[in-house]
Amino acid sequence: MTACSGQLAAGRGTRSLVLGRRAAILGASAGALAVSALQLPAQQATERVMETGRTPRRYVLPWVGAAIGAAASLVYFWSGPRSLPGTCSQAACVAVASLGGGAFVGWLVGKEKDELHELRYRGAQPLRAANAMELVLSGEPSQLTAGQGLVVASGTGGVHIVVSGERLQLQDTRAPALRGVTDAVAVESEQVLGLTASGGFYRFPLRDTGTGTAMRGPPATAVAVLGADFVVVSGSRVERIARSVADTARWPGITLDDSVRAIDVDERGNVWAVTATQMFALRADADSFSVVSRTAIPRGSTTKLDVVGNLAAIALGDSGVRFIAVDDPGAPRDITDWRETRYVHDVAIAGDRIFVAAAIDGVVVLSLNGTALKHHGLMRELGLVVAIEADDKYIYALDRSGAAAYLRRFPFDF
Image 1: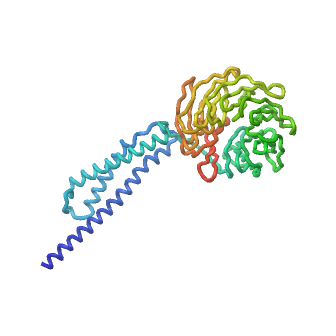
Image 2: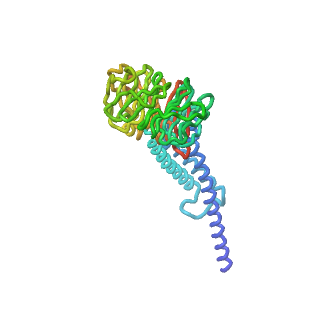
Image 3: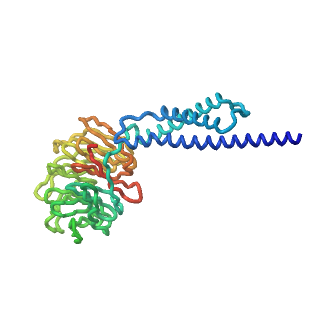
């Protein structure tokens, strides 16, 4: 009797070891298969330049789960005796349970992935720009301007001057000790850099270590180029400051109804200025400006303005983007609004595309045909985009998602 009890205990111990071994093998194999299977769609997606369509994962992953279940059932039967006690230890029952359970888990995982994808892209196509390039910048730049083969990134830590050729190359950093830099623009033909900061408006040599000249006292918040002059925003005033004359006592200009948030100068020499509620078209008048038109805009956190050809795009923060036809500066016409993102820092028009710096959503790509907007997709891998700019070849995006700032470049005709 004692011998029989010992044999029975030994048999139970053997079965426990076998079952434990099966469970360990089953868990390891299922985990490895699940990781590789679930990573495959993501790897395939990142290798595409533009995703043309996405099969819902809740339709795909049940098949993956069923395959994992089938593999697990085979491992179960290859790992020990073919017959063990239990309500579902036979081949048919184990196979059905493994296949069905794997398919159900796959459906649950796929459903969650589809919901996360919808939350991230809001129905837009995921896009990835080909031939993208990046450069790490120090400090905390928050503004971009581009042109004549140069990119200027300005903010806390000074003004970074970047040459945009076969690759992005940091050429120099000017005014690193100047506090509160808010905007900057380079004039390559004259080797001059103009910048606004908490101390006012300054002019610096572009490519040497010479010191800057204080051209105007505070406030000064934005700058653009018009002919031989800088156009400087000072509160509610838009002023003209000659680049060739160090006149630090006289700043001719015009006073508008409210503080100016952003300015731009178009190819025809019109100056466009936006306040919290209006967009002004200004024309050079002697050494000052005259108002050509004023257009109401939605009240919002106006951040930037881009005018190219006959189209003006105004970044309105949490109010999205307002598009205005400016073929006649004396009578601009509202076209449409776009509000399908949480916050808009900046906007850039390049060719037939409109690129929106949408903060944590990345870069949104739009186009406008008449009054109809088309949403081409979203580039989330560009990070937390706070500024965007275009020249005749490239789009430049400023990513502030990490400890460092990243200047990213990609062709706008991708």
